[in-house]
Length: 274
Image (cartoon, rainbow, N blue to C red; front, side, top):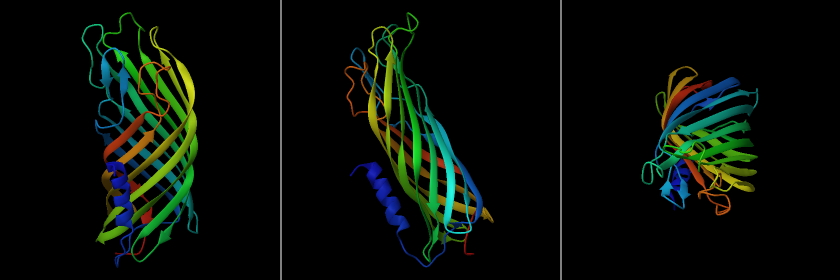
């Protein structure tokens, strides 16, 4: 089993534990959160150049925001966005003319969702469903790029489709809770590749698979206000080509992984007093 599947299975198992405790649950009214994330170097497939080798993006940073409203019943509506941008990757090939790297790699998600809030003796659970729009970008650049505009490679994918998942929490002690969640999305879109004079360009329809999960700790430092920190991993499979040149690019390749520690602030999560 891959580490990504193990992470999601761990989140599901921990949140399924039934103890005699009450966790925070989302309260009626406006709610929101904002998080920052450090993206590690192990972030998925890179680009292969037939001439000088293979390179992946470097580490990076990102974050997510969410804003929503819970009605005077279990239902809520929310919108959210996340973004991660990666640094210049390892330089491959001999200088000065054939040294290159992955540059400008990024991924953006825009989500709309409806959630159903449930409180139990063992904790709180919020399954949700909705839609996602995603844009992912990767580029290959030479150092130096001589002549200017020569031989580069840029891939952009756009996808839209349904998404489902859940968030949950289990009270541990005092104001501290264990939090986690998982989600999957099936996106239908198009991948477009453009290159310099010696690199082929083109476009193709593509089905993109998203799946991810997070787990962490939550501290309610004052009523309805929380600080949370943990680890998150999100995978977008099929979002770009992994080989220089559109004609030779495998039709189903290209993972982009955004993973690393996160920390942030949440508002309007309350519940039964501990």
